[in-house]
Amino acid sequence: MRRTAALVLLGMLTARSVLADNCTEPVADSSCLALLGKSLDGLSALGKEYLNMCYSLIVDYAEIPDLPGLVLDTASNGQRSYDGWILDPVMTVDMVQAGMVEPLDTYIAADASLNWPDFIRYFRQVSSVYNGTVTGMPLAGKVSTLYYRKDVFAMANLSPPSTWDEFLTIARAMNGSDFNADGVPDYSICWQVINCLEDTVVFSQLLTPMIQALGTKSGWMFDPVSMTPLVNNEAMLKALSLYKELLSYTVPLPRGAQCMLAHMPFLQGS
Image 1 (cartoon, rainbow, N blue to C red):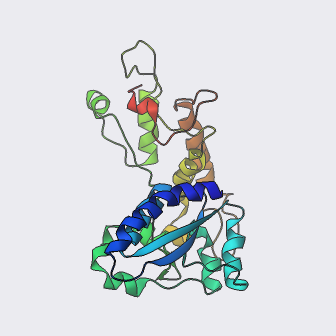
Image 2 (image 1 turned 120 degrees about the vertical axis):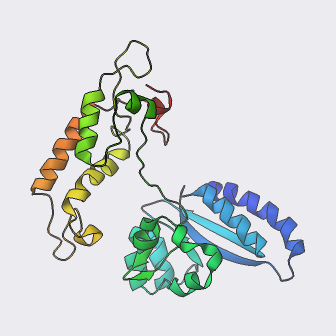
Image 3 (image 1 turned 135 degrees about the vertical axis):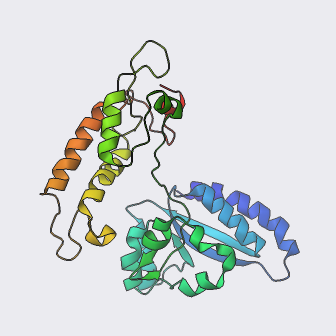
């Protein structure tokens, strides 16, 4: 764990020795606690920005199971003080209730260079907000996007789907086509859902449009007020049915293959 942190900070400390001579004020240290392996490229870029402002960024890392306890311990016993945390927003509730989070709305309004409206709406209105107040700044995130073969759709005289039912109809019709002219029938969907982390993401995206009549206020696995499970209903049955059929049109991941951010079958045209 410490070795990982040292590798990330090495470039920062090297740059600091160059930039510190150009600073009119002494270099000050800021420290943060980060989820191990979380946005390392983003941390490197953030460290360089700190150096430009005559600060250095010292990062400690923790494994996922250890992070909540370490974060909340800093508020209860003061063993280690951090200026910030880099973690998943699911921990925001506990941190706000422990008085550990500074509201950021005033700072955001005063910083035109931040260009806050340019952030993806989910990150600035949902994951960064608790009880109507911005409590964190997005450092990195993922957004699901539909990619499709324009040439294949044009030849089939099809338009991109705008609903899951349309998605299913197109996938069903195009499955088994030979997209790369190699004489072998191809699958119509290039998800990585089996044995990869995309299965829960895909299923939640199938279910939530049908179950959240009031948007995120409705909850999707549990009622946000009573915590009653929202699983015994027609929306869940519909989502499961869609998911099952869509999986049958999805290119299988070869045994032992590594899950990748890029969907190689799509990039290879197969």
